[in-house]
Image (cartoon, rainbow, N blue to C red; front, side):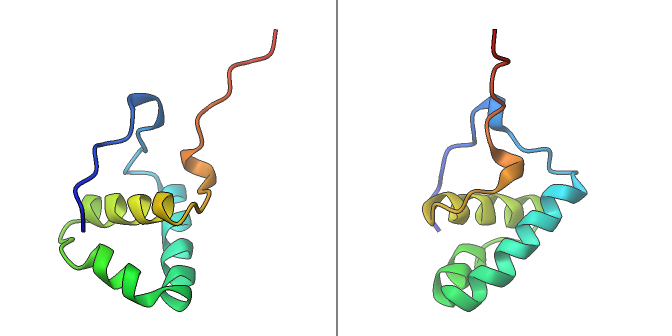
Length: 78
């Protein structure tokens, strides 16, 4: 797994969010059936919950999967 920089502060996920965990779990299950090698490779060195989350978020970005909880908040329209 390549080292990726952390997401910008505006997009930094709340790693204690059950909603984020649910979205990442669904992505993991779907990804494991669509591209099992990439999922296994991304998670190979993860040992903590935060590392698993970071690895899945990076893989989702690489695969261009839109995880709704990580979208940048849009500025209110004037």
